[in-house]
Image 1 (cartoon, rainbow, N blue to C red):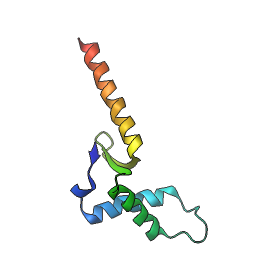
Image 2 (image 1 turned 90 degrees about the vertical axis):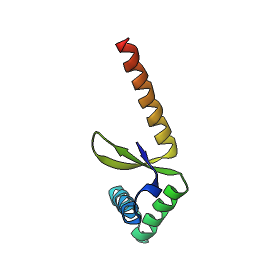
Image 3 (image 1 turned 30 degrees about the vertical axis):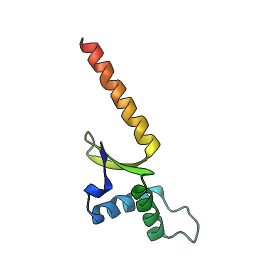
Length: 88
């Protein structure tokens, strides 16, 4: 399920961006700046290039590109259609 960034606190948004950036690793060279990278991720979220996606099953959230999110939602809709057809 996609979560609009406007529905969460600034601290939560920053925490999600921090977790994402730290998960990427640190292979950016000597000039890598974590604060700058976090700000870039938050800006991408605000511009709609990246979305916050919450998974009810795992109770985790992740950041997906808009394209990835669209593909995931289409796959879920198709899976639900298949379930409906099998139950007919």
